[in-house]
Length: 211
Image 1: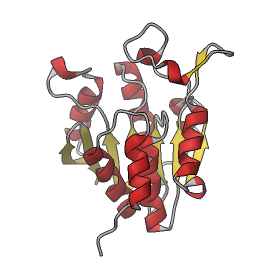
Image 2: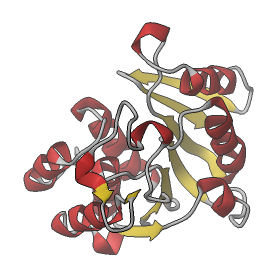
Image 3: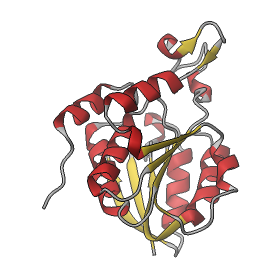
């Protein structure tokens, strides 16, 4: 039987602040339904919860393992004041920092997914040191987009994915004029590694499967 999202939850996910398309989100949902039966899923870069809702809803439908959401919730470099993607709606005037955590938690609660999400507020590479290998069914990388950040996330988290599990990478732009190239470089290098099978692209979402 084909698994589907609850309509109200899908509507909410599409309305949440973020940069994930409907097609990309639905791909994550279906991968989470499939993979979370075997082990937890994990995402790097939750922002306000758009991708988290798609993934956690897949975990809920599967009914076995949750989604771990890793984010320091202080925004990436391009989301800071004066930068291209700065949004005053997520800037804490009292603390004078970008703070996406309140919106993230509100959106997860609205989606009815609190039981299926484990938020971890830290740097992703810091957390990866404490995770055993081969313990996750899916990792979605959508954190910092510099070469250093993207490859650090790959190197830190790819060994944690079980054989047969998925590595998903967002913002893969084949044309440099459309966006930064770091995620594409990482995806390209990983797809040429014998440990991974390239499943393909859904818009800017790349999917690899561990052999």
